Image (cartoon, rainbow, N blue to C red; front, side, top):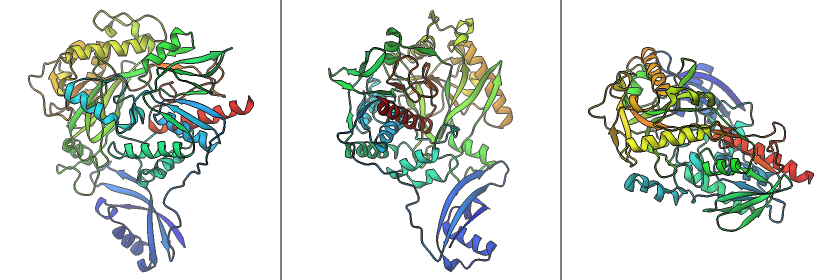
Amino acid sequence: MIQEYQIRLDPHKASSEELIKEYIGREKGLDIRTINAIRILKRSIDARQRNIFVNLTVRLYIHELPKDQGFTPTEYKPVEGKKQAIVVGAGPGGLFAALRLIELGIRPIVVERGKNVRDRKVDLAKITKDHKVNPESNYSFGEGGAGAYSDGKLYTRSKKRGNVEKILNVFCQHGASTSILIDAHPHIGTDKLPRVIENMRNTILECGGEVHFETKMTGLIIQNQKVIGIETQTGKQFFGPVILATGHSARDVYQWLYDHQVDIEAKGIAVGVRLEHPAMLIDQIQYHNKNGRGAYLPAAEYNFVTQVEGRGVYSFCMCPGGFVVPAASGPHQIVVNGMSPSNRGGRWSNSGMVVELHPEDLGNPDMQINDSKFEDTPLAMMQFQEALEQACWQQGNMRQTAPAQRMSDFVNKRLSFDLPDSSYAPGLISSPLHFWIPKFISSRLQQGFLQFGKSSHGFLTNEATVIAIETRTSAPVRIVRDKETLQHCSLAGLFPCGEGAGYAGGIVSAGIDGERCAEAAVHYLEAL
């Protein structure tokens, strides 16, 4: 017999299946000796009051055992000799597109400009050690895309776009912990995700698909307003309809599309900083306890959002117990991002703190960056990103040393004479961020920080560090596509996909969009 219950426990009792079993047995009048197994289906933490509770949905197996692995596997059959489709980019959008193509009987040919997920590590280490960025192998480019070494958070609000549970189950099938099916804010961890990505690639290869690393698309092959394949820097061409999942940092792709009159449009983005606190301080604030999280609670998360002068100011990609990383994808750039290992056990917690920007904001004098001028083209927001990242690099002594300021000093427009210890490995340099970050952004961040400090006592502090600059929250360009067919509006056979095309905002939503684009590509192939 199987029974399910919703229960509410203190963190200690919720940490142990035996204690959960004892509690249910006592409250429901069950003989715990008859309970052969217990499975947690959903778990969330209620930290709104001083007394913290864990909400659980549990399934009891009475006089029987579970008959499954805790997740629903997908069947992938061989596709050798089948029709093929090209997937450009091996981030979450591209990988899930390739796997969905296999499900539907189409052979995927995946081309990825960067290296495989393991070899990327060497190039990432060079950014920290030598302050050198490989433009084809970095935190944005390579197998797994920007998500591979960027925390592996799987929380999404995109419930209506597709099957979130399917995406999570595919991750579990390829080695992720089944806890991602349980937790309210699921998270794989940057230390675990690379192996999961390797397993996804192996599934593609075992089924007869192809994966080509260090193979950069240099252009689409277009005949009679139809995309029939791609050209690459290796000189090799690949033919088939194209799922374009190149990510939000592939600026050369945006430039090629613009130069060849392929319809694209400027898109709103959010820009700001990484804010880093001691993890203990965030735990104390969020759990209302001077001793922090204790032995049975995870590193605390937070989520802030407000409106300042008509623009949203909000936290983004919060990384409890994590670290800040150098995420530039080319020379003369500083870009920061955050990530956490699976145990979220680091000394610091960080989050992007960003301001919503619209393309029309570029005409505002308070958006000025040095002498840069931004023409009214679909690439204007991308050019703004580039100019701001270069200005940050100049402030960082033309290395990956990130300009930074204590949080209260930033709000009060004071130079920080020293800086707290930080997780940012290339190092920090004290800089008046309030002076050189465009006033349109810095003034809204300052007002937002004041509001967040009022709603969360202790959050606004000089123990926290503001680190510049966070620019890669989303794509600055949208590659226009038809809402029904998901094809490009004027080019048949081209399926703009995922975050880089402007239709997703994270690992799960990119995976969902990848599946949808694969389904659209299959319909296109069937109609030929």
